[in-house]
Length: 232
Image 1 (cartoon, rainbow, N blue to C red):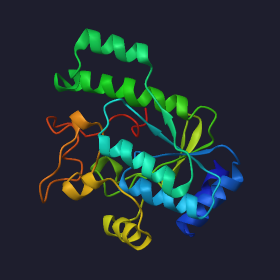
Image 2: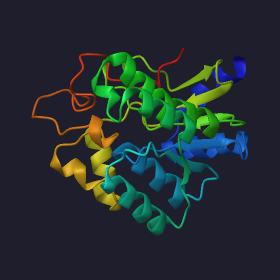
Image 3: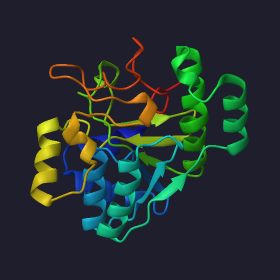
């Protein structure tokens, strides 16, 4: 896609606020940012709100999040006077899964964990992105091995939209530097060793020197992805 190539070249040479503003102007009303309330996502929320960029923000409530995450949603909305749209899993799908496989089925096998992620995250994400032209994420290339080769922007044919990762080449220190300078609210669990925060039963703090994603699905030796950012 020639247009996508031109857009990518532009985005490579501008600041994050400029890039976000550009895509919001190219696709008015059709740009959404998916936030998991992580540190990178809080940086993007701050940039979007402080620069009054026309990008809606949503998050996925799996029903198993930490209480600190729920509190951060409220604190973020109060700080920026901007509503975060919340998408939930389909109740009947959760009921069927839990009644058949147990409340903590994800500990049983990788297959059952991925089924839980699919029902609680992947399906709600599909609904959240319906009719969207550009999906903004807070992914960084240094977060996991699988994310090292991520492009700045890409066309997702299965979703029929553009995925834009504006913080792709930011370091962790740059993220924290922005948070400190701008006093961005973030999850207090980060200060207790939780680098990547997801559902409460599936997340633990990591030890010094461990991979940043080691605390996610810590009982597995898989690729540590839930399916949201794995293209099929």
